[in-house]
Figure 1: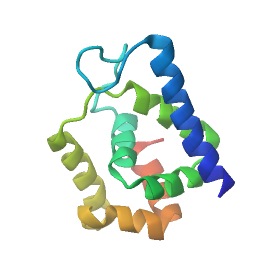
Figure 2: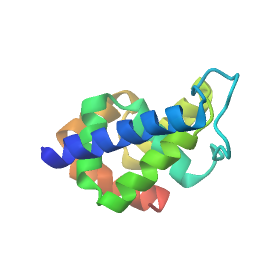
Figure 3: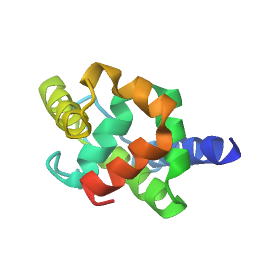
Figure 4: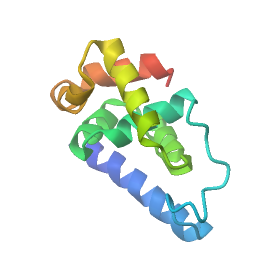
Length: 127
């Protein structure tokens, strides 16, 4: 449980630090992050999956990853440009279909079997 909290807090802390340091506000369109990552990059797509899940499911998945992967994904999340709804649905749908899961049930599956979903994320997105 401590790993879950530490991973989530590290991501939030990094994001808050970057917001203060770089003087930008994410997702407004006025001041986008510098050096945004392409939404087609596999790590960006994994980050989109994490952002699309309920927070408790994402926290459980982060707990299954090693600290280096958690750090890498939190940095990618901070560099993501605004994600259109159709891109989010395509990424989540593609990943869910590869697992044989209904996209609407991915959050439940991640909460129930985080180790299995985390291994699938690592393999599918080459984390």
